[in-house]
Image 1: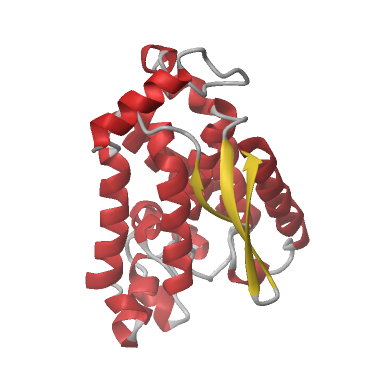
Image 2 (image 1 turned 90 degrees about the vertical axis):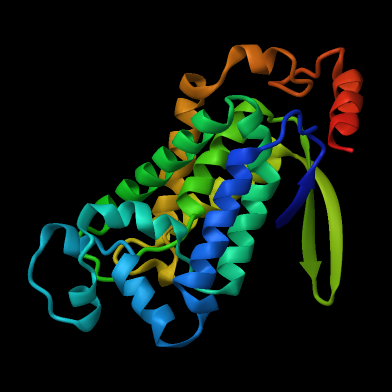
Length: 253
């Protein structure tokens, strides 16, 4: 299931979401060379998070020798990606869910929340395989935190999803709790199945850790004054939903 949009009105301009998308794209362009050549491969080793390197000084591979950022790699790894599908998929999820979560807390607080979600995701992945020498990269853990927050804030909002069936692409509208609930169950299943292996190159426990962090801590970050006027907060739609929707659309035109 691929989310392409939701029915949640964007109340304010999501400056932090735009900046995070820009930072990821500029990193992909300038540091990762759009996924081509030796510079791309070196960027993963230099700036990726390698759990083994955090607690061991001994290097027995070129990649480990390049990995010298230590704990700062927890931050740098959030802006690296492993391919075009990886970065486009992550940024699509951030685009769909990020703006509405940012609406509930403001741009600066959202940026902080995003980074902390990424840190929580990295810690979760490290704890499952602290001796791993495979670089961990990607914004998925931080975006997982955004998704966890979205589930708590807007469980009933309809999300438009794209489902490829053979050569035909179908679109459906499903409640956020169904789409995000299905996603986290898949991560849990794959995460449990990945114990004792490298998880097929996917950091499932980072996804889970970020998601749980977002769902658990959203009440600490949300601004109740901003949420008071939001039409789709919680399990009930407020009476002024259509009015806010119209004002929101007029503001963006």
